[in-house]
Each structure stands twice: as structure tokens, then as C-alpha cells.
Image (cartoon, rainbow, N blue to C red; front, top):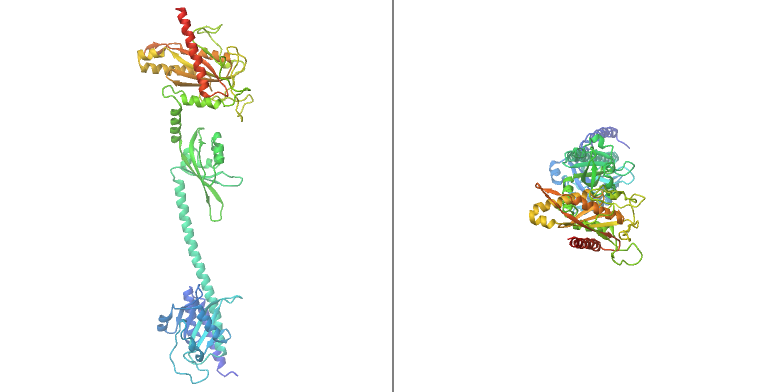
Length: 572
């Protein structure tokens, strides 16, 4: 039965409990909340000492806050008790609802465990419910929910009235522990949120700094940079270009956004662009300028993401390699062309001839060699019937069955089938078989030219005059052939002309025209000099080697020289 004063005590305790719980919600941090929990036990629940033991991530409990005695606070704050020792205490204790009480009569077995503890001195109890200095009372704090996760334990010592708490005192401490658990959970949540916000702000600052650094590196890079769409219907469309790329192509950034690299690349390089991979791909190709010209560039691709899970883009580095390419082309030209005349040299001649013939004969049966009718010579002595020196003659490219050329001069033979367009299969080279008679067969004529009288000019007037003669002869030969034919200097005073799509009469006419072009005087340093020319006509045919083709034409040229010498002796 309640005493007269008990309702007053209960009301007073409720007021104090309300105040200390209210104080829990004003703490700004987890550390402040823990200290407020400890202070509230001493101030609101009238215990002399209070200690808050908080569960660490590893499961052990650390003394996180202490109230009631500064000396004891300095001694045990921060000390750690193992989870096993705490579980042992909570298990052996007498349950008072959610509270756990260990009387002094049983607590002696706990003197040697590692749980931090502090006791106030006092006389031995005289009454059954009087508090003993070695009594222990714990208020476990559990997280909300069904799992009842242990957050920590409030340990109290010696009520100020010196007696064990009654049912109301136990309930008040239990209620306070429950509210403290909520306050600690909220404080932890706020602390985690604050740390997350701080971390997010730092990441955003780092991201902004990184973006600014990238922007400056992109905008002010000395070479071209571009960002393009990756995937989807707009794959390859330029989204952003820097000033260097705009200057290189002569187009403003607003205009560049209308294009993709596929729109700007040279038609011959579109395959190279399409074969270039997005990740780490490299390519050398030509991009179109605003003025219609093209510039050689080196493209290097990489894939970048806007955010961790955001869309990916293609970052392309564009380097101007026009000067290097020009230098490479100059070196290649020097390696394949004669330094004096600028004509293809012997190696380039053999390469072009080799590309036109194959090892398999075009006709049935094994190849038996050029034979006596495979070619013929034409020199300066008699002209064909009906021809006269200096008379107008038809161009050899205008004969029936004349050949169309799709390539420019000195860029190969340009042979294409009658249907036009690129061809997939090798077209066999064949030779006319009728000797001097034109049987209608069109083949690849090889005209071997040797200058007559050049050695005497070289010996009499010097190499300077001889070089000038060779340069002029090269010019006259080049002028006298079609675009697509090849005029090469084999060495010394020997030249070779490759002319595809000719019959026997066409080749003979070509030899006459070239010989007549060479005969006129050549003026060097105010002096007129003359050279003649002997031509031997051979035919390139599949099944022959390059050397066989050239030797055949060479032999025909020497046959012509010998026959002409005999004619001169008989005439003398």
C-alpha cells in the first residue's frame, strides 16, 4: 500500500525525468548526447555515479561518458570492456524488468574481469534494501525494432537515498534508458548524416575542381580535342570541340556541333575511321577544312563517363601531323623517284610492272618466252609508210578500242574493266601475237628507250650539260604520254615507258611520236645540242617475270641499234 508521500515523489521524479529527456534532444553531437545521458542519471534520477558504456563496431563496450565524480571520470573514461565480460554480467544478474541487478553477495566473482568499474565508499548496509557499495545495477539500451540490438549499457551506483530503487524508481530508470537509446540512435544518425554530407561536399568540391581542371586542359590544349556521342542514333556526333581543333579545321564551334568525324573525314579514309575502336583506338587520316582542303591528323580515342553511372562519351585527341606526313611523302618520293629528273626510278618501275603481271600465264599451256614476235624495235631511220617527220599524226590514245584511264599520270596504270569501277579479280596481261600486224589485242607495252649521242655530249660539254639534256628528255617523254602511263628513268641515258591498253600499231606509233619529240635541238646555256633515241618495244604478259619483260624490250632495242648501224654502213 502506497505511503502518503509516494505520489509526491512519483510526480517529482516524472518532472525530473521529463526535463532530462528533453535535454537529450538538445544535444548537438553523439558525444554531447552520451554525456547528457550520464548527467541526466545523476541530476534527474538521483544516483551518485552514472557511466555510459557504448558498443563499438567490434562489439566491445567503451566508457563513453561518466558523471558524478571527476576523479572517477578521468580514471575510467575511454577504457574498454570485452563483450564476453559484459554478456556474462548481464546473464548472471537478477532481472528487474529490462534492468539487471547484481547484489554484492554475488558480485565478488566479477572482481577480476575487464569491465571498467568504480565504487563509492560507504558503510555496510544495515537494512535488507539498503544499497551496498559493491551492488551493481545496469540499464541496457536497445535499438528500436524487433532485433533488440544492444547499443550500450548505463551503469549506476548508489542512489542518493541509500536504498535499492523501488518499482517506480526501476521503471523510471528503465524508461530513461529507453529514451536514451532513441537519443543515441538519433545522434548516431545525425552524426552519420553529417559525415556523409561533409564527405559529399568534399567529393563535390573535388569533382568541381576536377571538372574545372579538365575544362581548362580541354579548352587550352595546344592540339585538337573533341567530345562526341558514344552509341545510339547520334553516335559520333560532336558535342564539344576546343579552340585548337576549330582553328585546325577552320570552323567555329557552333558549326562543328553539326558534324561527326565521319562527315569530315576524307572519302578514302572512311574505312580507317570505322575500323578505329572507341577505347584506345588510334588512326591517321585526313579531315576536311572549311576551304575544301584536307589536313592529315592523328586521332586517339578514349571513353569517359559523365558520372559514376552516367552516360559515356568519346573523347578524341586530334593532332596535326600534316608536316610529318609531308615529310614522309617526300622521303617516299625520294626513295621511289630519280633525283635528277623526278621520274620514277628503277625500283618504282619494277614495282609498278610487278603489280600488273602475275606468275600464271594468261593463255593455255606453259609460257615459252617472248619469242621473236613478242616485240619489235623502232628506231630513228625509216618512218612508217604514209608518215613524214613533222607531219601531224593522230594521238595514239585515240585509236579504236582506246583505253580510259581513271588515274592520273605516274599513279599506276589505272586499268579498269569495261564496266568501270573497282575490280575484285586480277586482269591478266596479254601480248599481241601478230608481230608488226595489229591483231586487235590490247596489252601492256614496254618501250625501252636509249639515247643516241648522249655520251659524246657528256664528254664534250660536261655533266652539267648532260644533266640538262636528261631533264629535258624526261620532260618531253612525260608530255608525250597519256595520264596513267609511266615514264621511268632506268639509269644513265636509258628510259622505260609503260603504256597499257595498246595494240601493236598503237605501240609503234607511240615510239615514233616519242622519238620525234626527242630529236629537236635542246638548248643549254645558249648552246643547241641534239640527241637521238632508239626504242625497243616489248610486251608484259602474265607468266613472265619483271626482268624477262625488261630484257625483252632491251634486246629489241639493241636489235634495232645494230640493224640501223648496218643501214648506215651500207649507205656510206
